[in-house]
Length: 145
Image 1: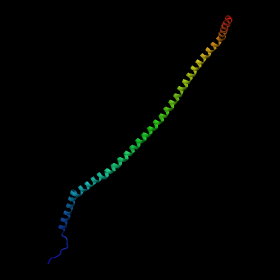
Image 2: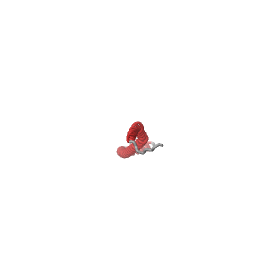
Image 3: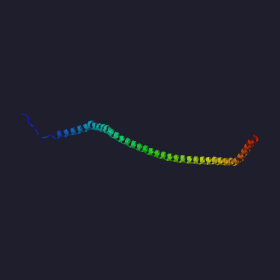
Image 4: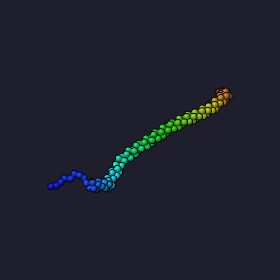
């Protein structure tokens, strides 16, 4: 009958350990390392792209905020400049109006002065004209009878 031998043979155990180590090395180099490398690349492409996209979106938001701040600042500066120029133009308009009013007053005064002088001249001539007319009327009324 057959006999069961439970004592391990050291040469067979050493050969099996050697085969295991060689197979483990072969499997690691040919299957596991390429698989893990492929898995890392895939992970980098998916989650890495998502992280890059999130970072780019954040950067775009920051740039948009800076641009909006610049636009707001430029609008405020433009409004301030517009108000300053409007105030300067209003002041200049008032100065022009005042100058025109002064010039018109001077012109009116000059015309009024000339009119007063001419009226005074004509008033001075009135007694002589009245005297001449009275003499003519008297002569005309006395000669006709």
